[in-house]
Image 1 (cartoon, rainbow, N blue to C red):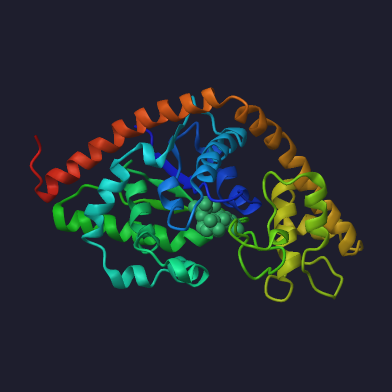
Image 2 (image 1 turned 30 degrees about the horizontal axis):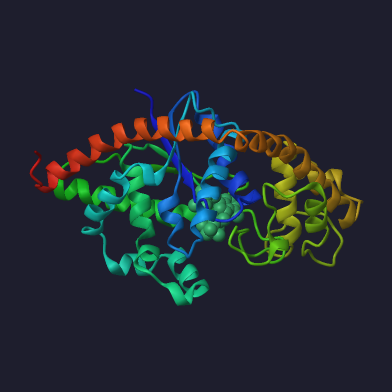
Length: 330
Ligand code: AQP
């Protein structure tokens, strides 16, 4: 039996370089050795207000990006969360062993509540429990995530342990896989905050579908500092350190090597080199995503096949959970 990897991204807005370097880029490496399950988490994405037609379009776009980034539907299960009802059903059960106080303490809930003060809905608060269901339904061993999701993964572990203690061994307790470099790509305009697809300032994020001109422009206007030295120092030089991290990941060079390469260059040469590395990496992904989006039937078929496989696995776990809590099975 192969170990199971599960992860997902919300089809909210345009995916960023942060989503790619922190999460999706790392997914491919597991495909040969693990049973990989990658989900487009559309149920999560309606915790903030959405335009329905946009959500539909972005669901296709996100699935196409997964494939364009190297996730092979022959090797991994790719599916859309709302096609597998067990995610919502398990969430209800897990809600009954999760405490309001725990959810209130979640950093993302606090952040999103302040950003969407007019829409602090129950779904926003319940987001971590739905995420726990996503993970636990598939007996997941490993969850590749960016650093921002660490707290949610810990809650998923706590919920699994709590359920197992209360009802006997049922869930696998998952581990997180957080990359050593790239776990938190920062905003280009406020380098002490993470790059986020819902950031209203478009200059703050590199979107995976940005064209070359936009990428160059955004890196040229990236906030740095005034000492002129390309050196990694997250505390005193967060902007330059963020750019060094991005360059190092995309050029397969270490941070030390990158520092040496740009030792006497000044920031404008360095920024253009980072932009160029990003453009080179994204160009083939963009072309492949476009090709896939021109073939909606193919993408729909991938969704259908993925949903069938995921439903089969998820129903088994849900039925076990229902038995354990005492629901009558017909
Ligand atoms: N800046 C980032 N650096 C590294 N990893 C990141 N991730 C997100 N931003 C960065 C990782 O991407 C995966 C999917 O994220 P998500 O779509 O589920 O939502 P999120 O974490 O809330 O990401 P965003 O971009 O900030 O979305 P919005 O703005 O819609 O809330 C996760 O593994 C995440 O860690």
